[in-house]
Image (cartoon, rainbow, N blue to C red; front, side, top):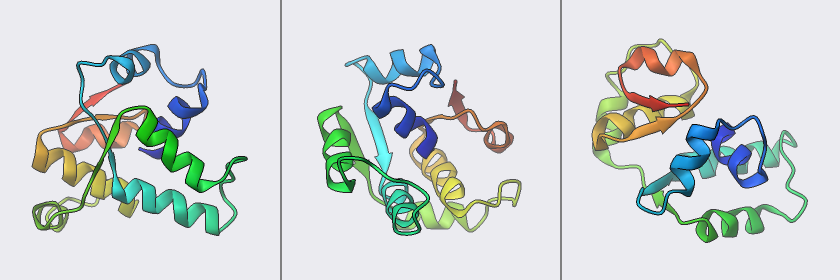
Length: 122
């Protein structure tokens, strides 16, 4: 969820302490979907987001904070094609399919995500 990533990188107090601790725990692997990077790029081009130091700096922050970029695979697409339409946002649906395929936990405040029976944290 892009809200989680943005809130973490900005040090926003909206991010739960539980999620902040999980992200900052060096024993945890942390992933950012390339789909989320794509979504942010689109929102920047539509003037829905603005980063004072630019998008390139935002990408550097992802790397500096130890996040790995998760590609979109055929398996993710196959699972995506079978998801119920509980949640209509295409980027969120992609994240759900990635979590299902790779048995990952999704950090999100979005209650609709939990209806897909994936592990979430908030």
